Length: 218
Image 1 (cartoon, rainbow, N blue to C red):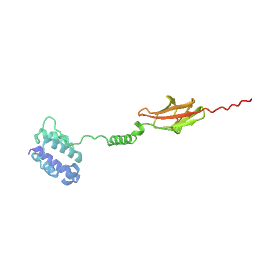
Image 2: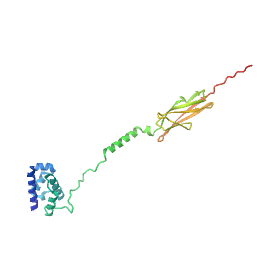
Image 3: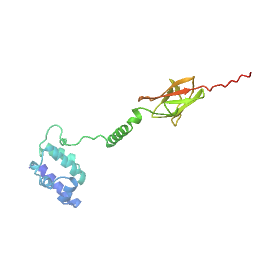
Image 4: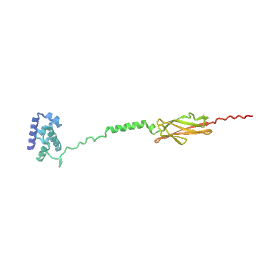
């Protein structure tokens, strides 16, 4: 025990008395154990933890008791009251300190996106839903040389009727005028999408031209 450590102990005692605190109050405020505070006030630095911890204690006490903890540290260290650990005295790093975690909201957004993609996979990447309202059957008779093929498309980008692109409305409705030749007419309708597959529907129209009645006057 040297003179400087005793002087610091007396100084700490005086600061406590000025504050009207006891050791318990000081321990709660500084987060330093009562046992270590008792050794500091007794000037018994040999019983304290290694120098970096003592350095930290002096800083904490300086903050709560309004004195220059660094100045006292330098004086005690220069007089050999505490053993130094090297050219730089600092508290050892906490090996168990958790590294900053990835913000939770990023994980939450990723999870929502995954759930959405799974739920909407068919709608986004699957086969388009092509409905043909007319002709209604695989083979439909007609007595007119021209018909309007129409229907709707869901989850698709374009409709082709006999390889000719047909405009699709915002509501998914589409129609195409087709000229028939006499006999059996095959109509191929395709629904396509950029990221998905193709739906195809084939309809046939049996066109029979109306007969023309002729009369001969004898």
